[in-house]
Length: 583
Image 1 (cartoon, rainbow, N blue to C red):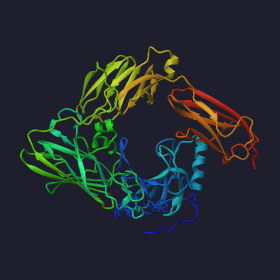
Image 2: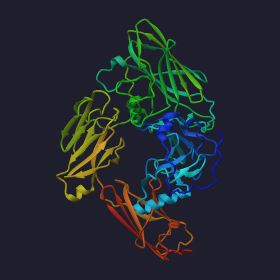
Image 3: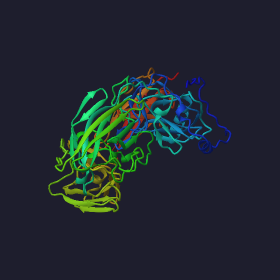
Image 4: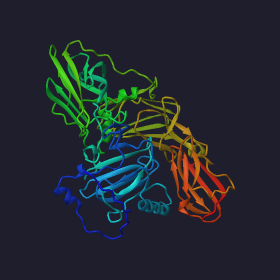
C-alpha cells in the first residue's frame, strides 16, 4: 500500500472532535495494523529485530538503520492521535506514542526532535515544569494525525547505541506485535538464519538446581541452509538449545529469528513464534535462554524446551514442552527448522541414540570471575513460594517470593563491607533488597555513602541507594558482589563553546560538559540572569546544551549559573558571564 505524505504541518486542535469509541471499533473488526505504512521514506534496513534476546527483556520493536544519520524525517504509519510523549535521559530518550483508530498504537523512539508543533508543545511543558525530562498525555483532540504525516526526526537520544529509529506496533492491550507483519515494513531478505552454537541438556540430572547445565555439540554445515550435529548419546529426558541469528541482504547485523520448529522422528514437538510479546512476560527472557552459559560466555542460547515457571506466550509447544524422552537402544532424529519472517529456512539435523552410558560432563567453563562467592560462604536454600531473610555483619538480605524460578541454593557471606551474594549465574524474576546498617558512620560519611555492585574487574557500579534511619538500602536484579562506597567529590563542570567574558553572538547553542566519575549525575538546574533555562543532557557525550532560540534572556550581558548534583548529593556550581547580541 502506498502512502501519500501529508505536506501540511500538524495543527494543534483545541476543540473536542466527534466522540469515537475505539474499543467498539476494535471489537467489530480485526486490526488493520498489517496495512500500516513505513515510518521512514528511506530503504528500510534493520539493525535489530523484533523479539531478540536483549538484557533482561525481549526486544519489543524494530531498530531501523539511518546510516548513522540524525534528522531523517519520521512519519506516522496510520491515522490517529498523539497520546503520549516522553522525554528522558535514558531508555527511549525522546519518544512519541500514537494511538490509532483501530485501537492499536505505534511508538517512535530515540528521536532527535519532534515535529515543529509537537516540539513547541513539549518545550512549553518543559519550561512550565522546569525539567528536561517530562511525560505528557495530550489527549486525542490536541494532535490529530493522518497516515504519512511528519511527526519527528530520527536521532540517538536515550540509551541508544547509535543513530536509528526504534519502531513498535502495540495491540489494544499494549502488547508489542511484530511490525514485520505490516505491509509498510518491506525488508529485502534472501539469507537463511545462521546456527552459531548447539547444546543439549540432560534434564534427569536436574534435581534442586535452578536450571539444567548444557553440553556443547559440534555441528557441521553441509550447504547454505543445512547443518548436521554430532550424534548424541543420551538416556531419559533431554532438551536442546541453539544460538541463532539472522541477517538481511543490506546489512551484516546479527538479528533475531522469527520461527523455530522442532520435529522428533517427523512429528512436531516444539514451536516458537516471535509474533507478540507481553511486557508482563518480557523478563522471563532470562528463563527462556541459558542464563548461566550467557553469564560466562556472553552468548545467548535459546533453550528449546519449556521449563517450569516460564509462561511466555511465544512458545507454542504441544504437551511434551519440547523435552525429549530417550529410551535405551532406540534411534531418533530431531529436526530443527529455523526461519526468518520472509520464509528463509535453515535445517539442523540432530541424530540421537538411546544409551545407558550418558555423557555427564559439565558444560560450564568458567571464563571470568563473576564474583559473589567467598570460601567461608553460607548456603541459603531459597524456595519460590517463601520470602527469605538472611543477616550477617551489617548486612540484611530480603529475597521476595518467586524471585527464582526453581528452588535454589545460594552461597552468601560478608567480608568487611563486602557482601558476597553468590555469582551471577542464576536468573532472577524479582529484585532482592539489600540493607546495610550504617549506625557506626558519621553524618558526613553517611551522606557520601552508597551501595555499589562490584564488577568482575573490581569497579564499583552505583546502585540506586535509599537512606533512612542510618540504613543504606537498594534493590538489585543480579547476583554478585556488593559493597559500600563513598563519593566525596563534586561533579565536574566546564564550558565547551564559550569563555568567560566572550562575545558569542554567532553561536546558536551554548554547550557545557558535566561529569561525575563515581556515583553519577543526579540532577542539574541552569539559569540565565536568574531565569530558568532548559538544557538538554546527553549522558553518552556528557554534554549539556542550551538552545539560544528559546530567547529566555535578551540582555546583552548574560550571566549563566548552573548547579549540578550527583547521586549522593555532592553539589557543584558553575558561573559564567558572556555577551550576546540578540537580533
